[in-house]
Image (tube, each protein chain N blue to C red):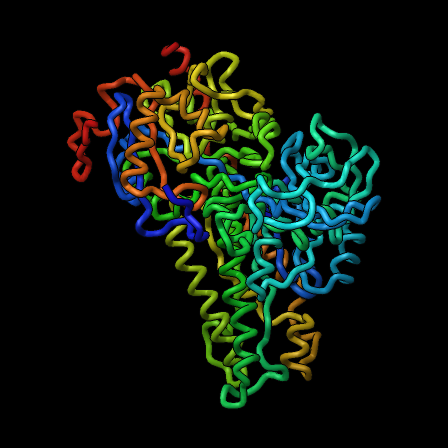
Length: 366
Length: 255
């Protein structure tokens, strides 16, 4: 597979791999997504807008150039913008592969950082020489203004051109709390949301502070995803419970939605509204209690993102999907193609495409 | 009776999250004061840093944002600060306006650059900012709070007045955008208003018509009150999404 290197959110030729509950695989144009949905289904997307979370500047004690990538926060509260966890790199920028970036100078509690119009202090190290708790100086409004002026979207070497904020905000972007884009949502536009409504498919959003996807350090990458705060509107939680009670499918747009909904339902199995902090890992051992299907980007098998897919499909199915993706030239990463994966064994008779009379959708048993 | 109505519309603004562009002078300033007085949570945008900071000091509860909505690359940073400071958005007032050539000029004497600036401020700016904030506005609507975009229009958007050509054409385009947005986003629950405040005693009017007698002009505070009432009327009376009790009952049955 090749990395999508252009920041086009909805290229007309985008592909969609469909894996149904029985492990059958199909290929569709991604523009046909709404056609796979049925009346009573409920699509949930993450409306987090992406912060310009990459900040270049100086490590004041040594004068060394550094790049700070904001990576986590405690809550979504409006005024909670002083304190972040952050990954710190040495000199250079996204054009160098993350794995090849030099480490920062030795960081210690109390070190001052000068980041353009922003300044802050390293409060403490978080169990790794590159991961720190950072506190910005100034009022919340001044910190937001500084981020807006000086920050750039976090990006990686596979996209050569510098990204602008509009490249990384999904069409439904709202609260600026994500550190990297909830990029499965790039597939949505207002036309497709209207098309869902016409089909009797409900649509709601949650807000989940999507964290960084890679740190360039194997040890640190194993700790991903970091804890991520989320908020589920009461009205959305209520509508989700109603959908489930009526037997409709919950379709998550992106892994962050899976993490938030499953966390919110971890108590009694019902999705509750309000704010929470998603701390759990989702993998082959996880039992999904809410989400029936996932629309996701195409990512490499060694990522935390990929681990989550094992909660939806068995290894054998994912390996067949991998072969299909390779054979059909799917493009990877945030601006790449998509996959729609239905939870294994879930009401198999209702699975995507099976016994389906939907025109334009023919299943191709592998 | 009138008093009761007014009390109701005042109550609609308590906790409402409102953003106003061009918020440091004229109608924008009057709207900031009017809506703060009604209990709104407010962010305002203007180009001049000193005036924004002065206003923010004067009105401690309002979030001042320095930015120029006529510049494409400033739109998302502005939007990020609006939604970030308010935690969401229920009402956007696209008020910032540019007259085009000053003093006003016949179209035949209008420099392209002056017309382009008027279009960038009065048409493209509101279009871009609305697009960048639409996710937040639609989320507010889904949450049952309602969502309103008020685009400040003008008599010159409808009638042709000599020397008002650049401004009038840009405001006509904005008015048409408002109507089209409204048709397209009805189902999302986002309403668009295009309102003409009338000839007011504002800095913009003083530049356009330097010899007019301020005593004959409307006070911007009066227009701000009218706009507040119009926004209140366009919002749902109360949370319009109240299906939870029923759903909870179904849930108990199903479990």
